[in-house]
Image (tube, rainbow, N blue to C red; front, side, top):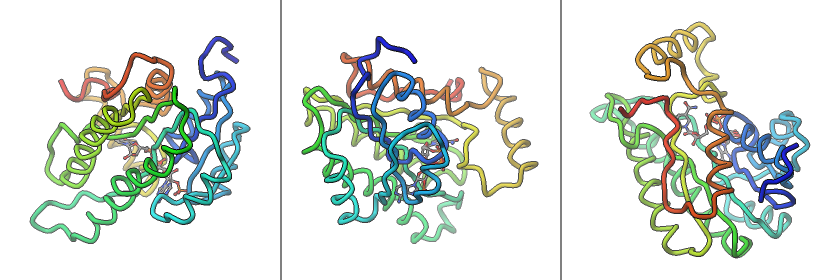
Amino acid sequence: MTTDSILRNQTVLVVGGGSGIGAAVAREAMRRGAQVVVAGRHLERLERIGVGAHAVVLDVTDEAGMQAALARIGHIDHLVVTAAAAVGSPRIAEADLATARAAFDVKFWGTLRLVQLVLPHLAETGSITLTTGVLARKFVPGGFIRSTLNAALEAFVKNLAKEIAPRRANAVSPGVTATEAYASMSAAEREAMFQRTARVLPAGRVGTATDLAQAYVLAMENEFMTGIVIDVEGGALL
Ligand SMILES: NC(=O)c1ccc[n+]([C@@H]2O[C@H](COP(=O)([O-])OP(=O)(O)OC[C@H]3O[C@@H](n4cnc5c(N)ncnc54)[C@H](OP(=O)(O)O)[C@@H]3O)[C@@H](O)[C@H]2O)c1
């Protein structure tokens, strides 16, 4: 365990912590001595990550459920949000708006309501770290739902940083990262996509959940950092 972190004995709530990047953040925060609470919709998924974190069922689209869960958790030093729904890649001309709305309901409106409900519980020295994504500032056919969603969150986190000061708010923006987010693809399709992506990235590989988790830890630990978006994308924006 790393013992000199400011996270030691602090409560870190990771919403979306049952898999992927959120689970890696939970692991890194545990290693620094934090009291970690992982939250998501499926208890068995949260318990399966097996890092010794406390598991709480919470759906960011269920306001009453969130209020009850937060009342049970109580004081929070740092909130990390990695929760998001799976989003397809429709083009603008053909997109079913219900699909786009569902994505915003979870990742944008769900995050916003979660933040509102967490603020009364958040320490005066606390922080909030949200998750955006490389498509907020990179534009590809079929990417408009993720572009608009993540760009909205990037604007939101800057407003949030101004309004909740001296508490801090930042975001981490992942590029392609090998996580359960791609579980609906076959293993062969997924591997081919990762290899195609790796070939065009300056870093020469796709990201790992641990690459990303290190950025969330930085956002929580660095007390002079607020209102920024940390890009961890292997050079995709160059
Ligand atoms: N992986 C990438 O390549 C990539 C690239 C750019 C951006 N991102 C962003 O990074 C973040 C984390 O993604 P990931 O790769 O770690 O994917 P992931 O493993 O699928 O994680 C998403 C988590 O969100 C939870 N979740 C979904 N709906 C929820 C809801 N309504 N309420 C509460 N929790 C909910 C899921 O758990 P339950 O289903 O059990 O609730 C899951 O644990 C997302 O915001 C994603 O958009 C990822």
